[in-house]
Image 1 (cartoon, rainbow, N blue to C red):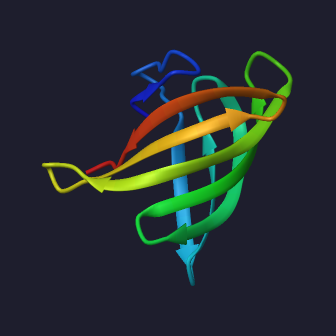
Image 2 (cartoon, rainbow, N blue to C red):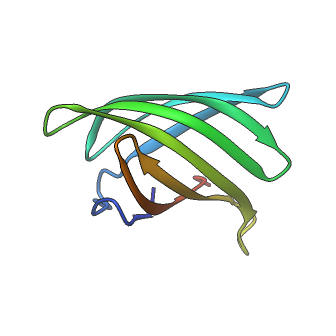
Length: 102
């Protein structure tokens, strides 16, 4: 993750995601600066990924919600996910950007 409107991203230990896909079903996990561990599952339709997620927070507690990501290809050829998401119980829209590692 390189940016998020929901929290400050620590460039030395950002939240990192691992994605898998089979037959347009996606799933994976994540961990990082604000999250001890998280899981997600959803679907991909073309360049759109829709998921539900849940994670445990470093600060304590848990969070979950839904997101829709747009898959883009950067000028460097690496994939980017531009994600619009909300947390359960809070309708505030957020945006994060994740970039594929070279």
